Picture 1 (cartoon, rainbow, N blue to C red):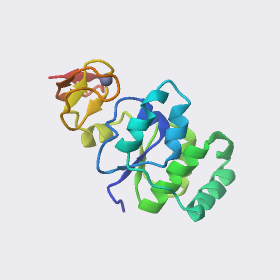
Picture 2: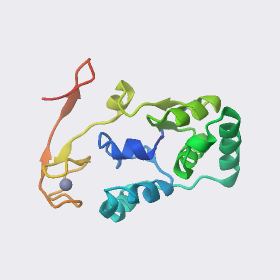
Picture 3: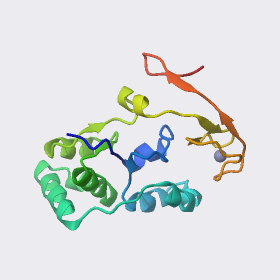
Picture 4: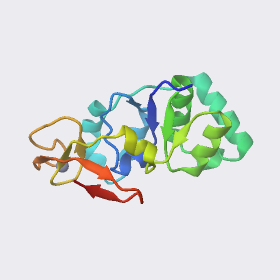
Amino acid sequence: MSSGLYVLDTSAILSGRINTNQENFIFPSSVLDEISLGKTARNIEWLREDLDIREPKGKSLEDVSRVARESGDFNKLSKTDLDVIALAMEYEATIITDDFAIENVASKLGIPYVGADLKEIRRIIKWNFRCTGCGRRFSKFIKDCPVCGHSIRRTVKSYNESGNESRR
Ligand SMILES: [Zn+2]
């Protein structure tokens, strides 16, 4: 059973493959803390408005932590990772991640997950507009990129069977 919602972990957001501004994507606020430690720190305020932020409840965090301890994954998971899994559990969402510890705990909890570069993701993501400067994708047309100020160009993107990106 799936709600049709997706929770992205930090690496999935930073991969740049995924337009974060989609109606069916939700995020814990702690992803912003984790991203702010990286090179994209200046984009945080813009991201905060872009993302559908929801906080996991203490009860689900406890459940996730307990299962992660049992499976030996707890020490490999960041606070954000635990939040991502807890949110997915509460909202019956699918996790988008390439992190093995997250995948392992998710599978023990019966939470579906997909890798950030799998076909499944390609199916749900449709790029329409892309910044000519930073490469960030947008679902709606805007004149200038709110992140770097360069112009936005319309692109249609598809993927071939080998998984490599191609444009048409
Ligand atoms: Zn840009």
